[in-house]
Length: 272
Image 1: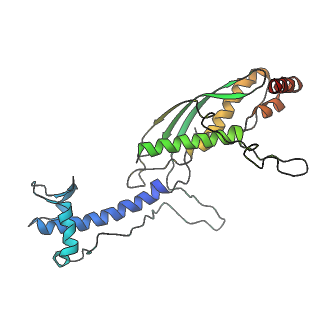
Image 2: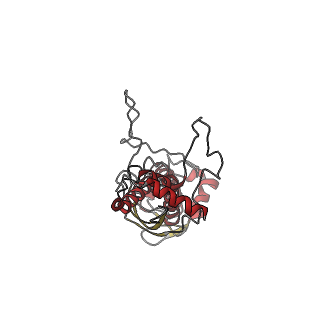
């Protein structure tokens, strides 16, 4: 279990400002609709199915109410702006600037994620293959299921890259030895074809109008840890002590008390 997505800005902050701006425009349209629904109180009206609707069942088309703003702005009640655009900001009291000693809480609210990773390891070469992954996120109110799932899948593959493939290496002289993608490996669809099961727990945030928390990078932080724990659990009976999140066959070989034998097996397997 980790803190999940951290410092996500779009779902908690940007969408909250969008809601505020939309509410301002909605209030203008309701006021305009009230001029067409004689005796109507704008506060009683609702926007539904392309209409401005009164509780007694009377209604007027949304486009006709919006047209009042353009064609007959003088009919609008005092204080109602004659425009169908709005600017808004969302600055919750819970967010604060950095302190004098440069401490800051950059997140308004926090999502959560729990993940389970199962791996298969070749006993001779120590090559690691991801077998199954289960990932459960609590990002608050789900604004768009498809986009959220895409963020989860993308973050998982980013985490896989950091945990098993991507590495800056250097020669003893300091010369980079991973200057191209032939040497700096990134996971592809072939490596990301493992069995993946995802789910979401919805606990709306009390600090945002929509209850959204954010989920942009959650699994990119939790997956490497779960992956390393799975590798450590699998190799512990062989006396291999895993102490780093980045686990490759080469790293596992370097941690083994049977290092020379394992290196020979790895070389033989590569040569064949």
